Amino acid sequence: MTAAKAAGAAPVTRELVPTPAGDARITLHAAAGPRAVLALGHGAGGGTGARDLVALAAGLPPRGVSVALVEQPWRVAGRKVGPAPGTLDTGWTPVAARLAGTGLPLVVGGRSAGARVACRTGASTGAVGVVALAFPLHPPGRPERSRAPELLGSGLPTLVVQGAGDPFGGPAEFPELPASHELVGLEYGNHGFEVPKRAPLGQEELLELIVTAVGDWVLRLL
Image (tube, rainbow, N blue to C red; front, side, top):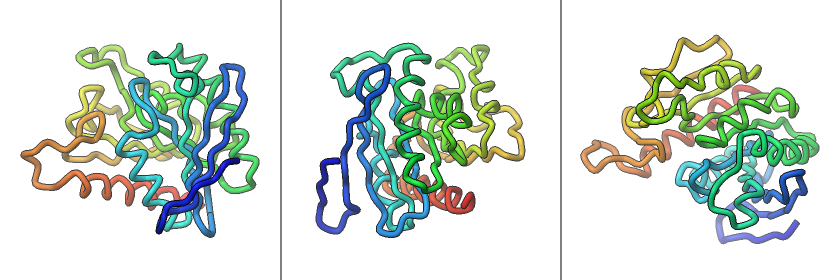
């Protein structure tokens, strides 16, 4: 791995992992005394610089959870459009296997399309749980095209964090979840967890709510 460290931040290491879909990239934000690793994939329209992923990578290592931000092979290769779901899964599972090999409990997750990948593959990777950020329950304006079976069929304890203004499905649209699943509905935030100017809380406050909810839930799994 190559390494870098900013003053006051968790040590950061980067590693390319070969997959059948091409090389994926892990950027690991390491906790000083890690109790678990949380692997997070990005969405179809962006990368690991998404505000929620960045906030989790900064906020969880001090709580003993290392955060591995995972770039899919299509992003590493510089392509602008993501491949089909099956290829996304192929580009993810070797990375999860690599992280599971550290010997620490592995929680897999991601935002949007990354959350779908984690739900589809988590049980087969040896993970102990799934974190689904901004799960795209349905295409905007098409509630009849529900992706709930992916979420409900994760086969693992699953945390869903969803903004009320998400056009891909707000918290009120989710079906009844099994006891193994937990839904954290945020009163504000769109699909990218962006807070509208009229909201009584700021952007950083919302991100802190996400970091706290995810951190508390992951540590309860251990």
